[in-house]
Image (cartoon, rainbow, N blue to C red; front, side):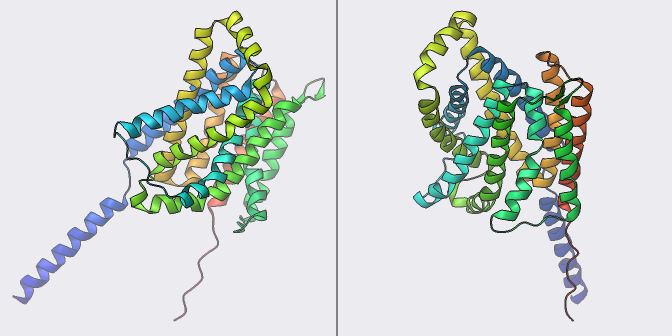
Length: 343
């Protein structure tokens, strides 16, 4: 009987280990490829329709807010129909999400305004500097996040590459200051959102009773972001919004304007939801690397669609900056060797 018991025990342990290994193996490669493909396609289409919309109407805070409305409606439909569980949040949970929603609002609006007043490719090149902002924020706000020295060294080609991209042959430094300022605001806001949001979202997703998976986390942040965007529309554009709308519809037609705003909002929400889902499956570092590669696609596609000139310095500078961002992401992954346990 002893030998039989040992055999049964061994079989049980083996099957348990196999089950745990299967659970730990995570999502399939096909699912991850699908998420990346949907993320890239959605992001590229968002940039195209966003640029078309902001070219039509000079009320870019309004465009940013309208894009968020699409996501709000999408979330309400998903929750109302029961296709997705409704978040179960307390007042303190919502209060913890408010600062993250504010920075999400500024990051989104900054990107929209940057691409509205400048080339999509230029905005993407400047946004490649986001790791530099994140590195500074990581050192200033607790908990202090000290990266390996190699990661900080990679900030040099990032900043240098962006600088080179701004140097025009025969003209010297030629910067669209307004676009650069809005893109930099987006970078700063994104860095603050990442710094402050990590612990909050982890806590919310860890409590199953709150129904806060990656999709619902993004949906809640999108709603709060919209609520912060509305006052900015009132302050910055309410006096001229009707005039700008009439001018845009007279020149382009109301249908074309509404379609471009609606499609940009739809693809903005969809690509972010896929990006959140991908990050939750593979981690922030892998997601950051692929986010870097994404910029290359957007720069190339936007240059073709909108006939944006790409001079030699722009191409070389953007390649250096994006390559530096890739190296920064990889270097940030490395950690010091674990301490040896005492005997």
